[in-house]
Amino acid sequence: MFDIGFFEIMIIMTIAVIVIGPKNLPKLARAIGRGWGEFQKTFNELKQDVMDETEGVKQTAGLDQLEQEVSAATKVDVDVNLDMNEEPDIKPDQN
Image (cartoon, rainbow, N blue to C red; front, side):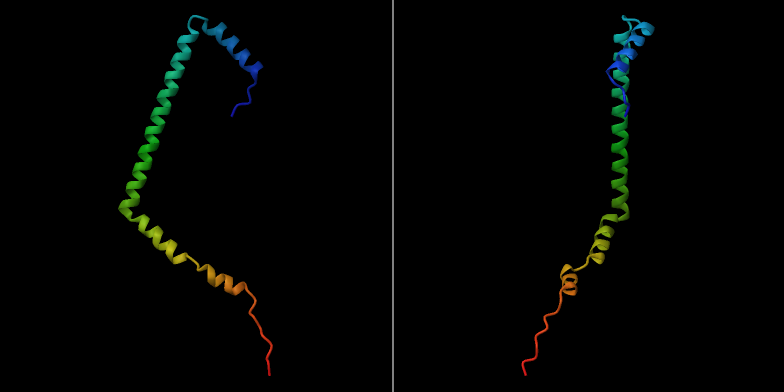
């Protein structure tokens, strides 16, 4: 995502220590960690709600059955296609 190397991380950490201070840096890191955890939890709950709602709509509209019917209607018999590609056996007349 970000192309940050070791040198860049060291510069960022040095600036953070100077600006925030060494005493407040652990508190800030802890707060960022909690915020990130809360964000992930909320995102996962939202994703689960969307998946549940989608499944409910599919069941209400009967999309599963429709998908099966479309799949059955569009299914092509493989044997038919193979027979069309094969050359017919032509036997010479044995008169």
